[in-house]
Length: 116
Image (spheres, rainbow, N blue to C red):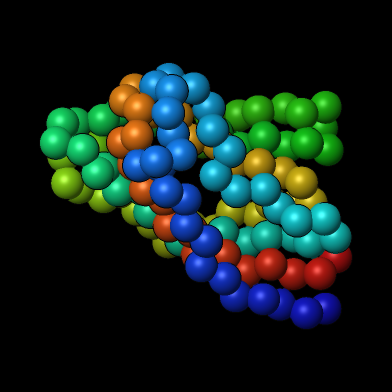
């Protein structure tokens, strides 16, 4: 089983045009399992933003659960979501983020992708 260590980024400053809408920031590739070991959200605005993070399990009839909900991030600040925890995702599972402000955040994910 091959492991690939990756850093994935999502530029919400230009790719998150609609406030209060879920946007997919990561999709597990086919034939892979992903271990999320780091998840940073940065507020790139001059005001506090309120974000939510959801995990969509596509194998279970597309069940979506709130991983974090209504979390305030002050202007110019970042939030480490994982804080020492790990998150295991299976093929085609999704990580989605929403914010109360358009074009307001950047995402950095540290992940390990494993062949299944």
